[in-house]
Length: 307
Image (cartoon, rainbow, N blue to C red):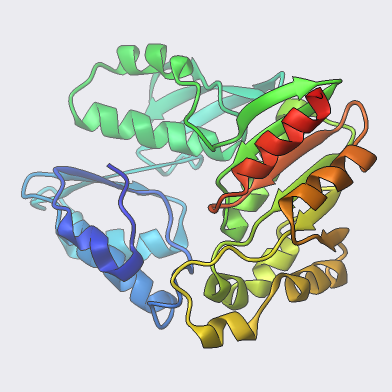
């Protein structure tokens, strides 16, 4: 099950094994600040059942604040804690990382003991870290290490996570759920490594007015790996009228241009598709990105170039 920290709804879950990937500023329409978010994650971790296990990112600064709690440390702790990451100080870590055709292979170590070699079929260095989290959780659930590493490459992803929508006329079309600045940067880096296109055209639909306003500067910096970013209007989710009046996509586009990113505002999906059909060339890549209904734009554009 995937847990969400919005309105502290994840505190209703009392798992035997819980995993925290990272803790960053988000849902600031609900939380006052980052400290409140960290505090909520701490409550979530303490909700793990007795004799359960916390699997934690050993390289995340905010996660570190939680696992430093004495209740997760020492042999007498009722909740065991295992960390994962690229650093050798983590319980589960990756070493001898190799990049082949845009995908990673690596050795997995547990407490300095090599468990074996595996590879992932999902692009992006962040997916090495996700894979280590999977290994740690599966091992915590009692699965055999060798079986975990053998099966891991068979996972080809889920819908709206760098989903390949199609390739036509040597133009590649992807769709991705990224709607937070950190996700956007990771996805664009993965696209660049995996597909090596001549140019990346990113169609980003901001998700929620308040998120766009609170993280405006971070959003402005997050599209540096795209060659051109097209921004439609913000997708409306539970925002107040005052929040909608305080920000719009034109403001985001202006801030992105100030940060050195080529960006353009086009409010309508059909006009975006027409713009792409006029400007995207063979060998280039289009990715629609966001948590709203921007995936419809990918479908419409792909159908258009096929026709």
